[in-house]
Length: 489
Image 1 (cartoon, rainbow, N blue to C red):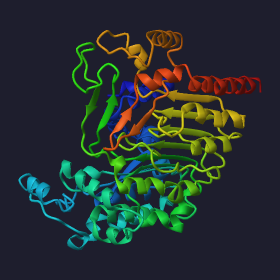
Image 2 (cartoon, rainbow, N blue to C red):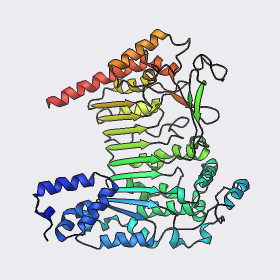
Image 3 (tube, rainbow, N blue to C red):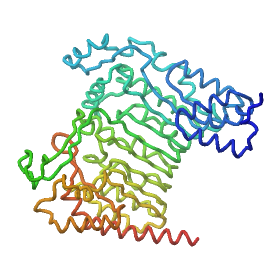
């Protein structure tokens, strides 16, 4: 019996395939099954099915990838290689407690815990030679242009709470640490190091889009000339830094109404709210050291980048107490910049100003000013306005959350105290009613306990009536003028 689907016009079949493709993982599996039904669909769907291939640091995964690489009819369809480093295939807990005997005892009941180092393992089990061979020769796939590198750190000790061991590492790694010795000793560092050593062996690769989902640990491989050469041709680069190691966020509430830190009879709310997720990674020595090396190990070598995305973790916004990693001389061709969870600072302003003739697109997502001796949003924006950007056509400052002024209309929320007049709040609400996309200009800092303090009413409301908004409108006028000029071309 002839399948009626094959008799449909090509445009209808393409429409059906696109809808299946957009339905998520199940849709991909459906297309994979469909491609196995006949030669026509195998040929038609091969560019979709083999667009992205996944590689893990196991021999079985590498053999599957090589089977595609050795097939002349399939390898040309591969555009994206997604590498995931994992130790899930190894049944062990490697130093799960960082030497903490009390925590070690807690784990003993859940699994046969033992401390394992590279000397106790077969190196091929951690990082097989065949995996190294693939990552060292990305030309196996002639059309490969995208590379993702990420690590499944939750599997590294075989137990979810073992992330505390990572935190212990981040408490002690600094400029005096001999990281190459740790990479020879500890399985997860050996895995990461060997991954980037293999990538550094590539010469004349075709990768133009690179997504690094980094564990915030400095590796010796990051300092190699081979790694620097690998970065030079990259045009689109995303840095996502892992930091979900059980962090705490504390959101400041209405201290004027509830100054004693107790439940308030007037507003019915405690003076602040907090969620406890453990120890914040951003307050560790190792994390700050890693952030301080971003420029030297990565950004200094992105000579061809036109699109840069930096995504920091909730528990470790960048550049709070370290210098901004972006310098004026870096990335001379940069056109698009996306920053998520960073502190704005003067050095960032100088970086933006230095790229006045190239930047077309800037997005700040959940970013913060620092009202205690740092840089305000207004000053940051003035750096760029003073430089006179000639091509900037998009500027977005996305708030940390829905503007608190709109939420304050809810009677269950506390109203501002003496430092903010009710009239000011009404004006702020009116402004936002007329322009719901008005930035919130969030301000935040780390307190002495390493907890993120997010300023609520006091500074956000003040910013609407102060220099932040004026500076924003000033730069927005330049952006709109650039758009008008571009539309006439």
